[in-house]
Image (tube, rainbow, N blue to C red; front, side):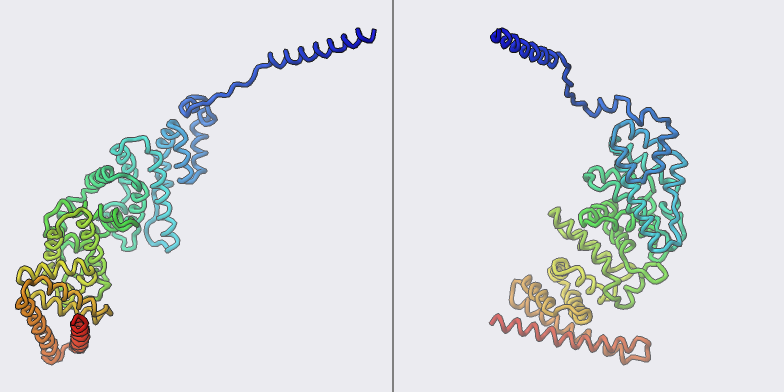
Amino acid sequence: MAMVRKASRKAGIYTQTHKSRKRTHLRPRPTRTIMTRSQCNNSSSFFHGLPSEVFDMILDKLSEVEISVFSMVSKEITRYIMNYISTLAWKNKTISQSFHHSTCLEQRSIIGHYRDLGLLFKRCTLLLPTKDRLKFIFSKFSQIPCFLLEQCLAPDCIGFSSYGVFLQTLIAGWDELECHRVFNFLCDFTYLLQKMEAVITGKPGVRWYQKLQLRLFCRQVLLDPWPNQSECQFWLMQLLKPWPMVSQAHLLFILYGPLLPEGSLGWQDLVERGLPHSALWDLARAILLLFGKLEVQGQCTNSLLSILEELIVIPQPWHVENVARLLVLCGSSLCYNVLVSKAVNRRLLETSRLIVYIILVCEKDGYHMSWAVKMVQQICKVFTTAPERFGFIQQLENMFSEVTREFFEFSVAGNHLDDRETFQTLCILLDSSARFHTKFLHMFLKQE
């Protein structure tokens, strides 16, 4: 009897276990599926079911950066946002800005706003071809006077700076071919080449407002916003490439030449008197950009030397001190190339006069005189025979005497307002001569 009960109990356990296993087996298991982005886009989403008015209200609450991120969710969202930012209401609210009479804090805020707009247009037009992207983007800014050449008269306008930050953010990371398309599009969009031709073929001092507008547009929109030197090189080369050497030199002066306090270019100042290094630094920086580009491309520097030769006679031959100061600011490599080019072509009088003024500039501006001594040593090596080297040194010494005599005669010629400055320069020249010869003899004795 006990055996039967035990057996029946086991049977009951088996039956319950079997039934529970059977129920588990029949219960449907959830299937794991992976949906692609296109499948998600095709499915009905929360935003897809919203009325367009409500969707617009949501976008109105978002910042430009947030909308730019949102535009990358799907093609449908991208299309909707492109339509949204094409409306006149959005344009009036977001793009129209006051670029005048603003404080520094307000200026930073406006420029930051256009950086955000650049990010928005960059992201929401990702799926379009480059040409269509540019058409869509720049059509939104076509009627803003502060973004156009010769349309805004306000002296404190930051329209070009805002435009430059927008463009730099928009095309950051684009390859060189796309940047070529951007430049060509901008030229067609703004008639840039026609406006450049009008000012670079004109006489110095004429059409000064158009020259200043061209300078501000090219510098603030195309050149200065780039923190990387290679991008700035690219845009400067694009601006210069369509023109012959004489026009390239003229354009370089318009873009980077010294400005007078009233805003016009200091054409005549470079001819009449020596200018401080601060007035020539921008021009030197532009030449260094070009020189670096030529070295990278492995090209001959003859073209750059030709541009320099044309530059230092605009509008007339410069004061020699300004030529010397520009070469010192450009550094050893370019300075050496210019001097050697003149020496090889037997322009020894011009070479020695320029070297004397380079030595004067080194003394005036606080450069080490050993730099000038090494430069003269390197130039001496260009001459293959001892008599040629002696002739060069003799010409240099005679030029020291001639320049000293010129300064002395000018200072005692009459009661000019700048006599005191001339006398001071004469004293500096004598000091520089003594310092140069001391270094030169010391270096010569060390080699013995």
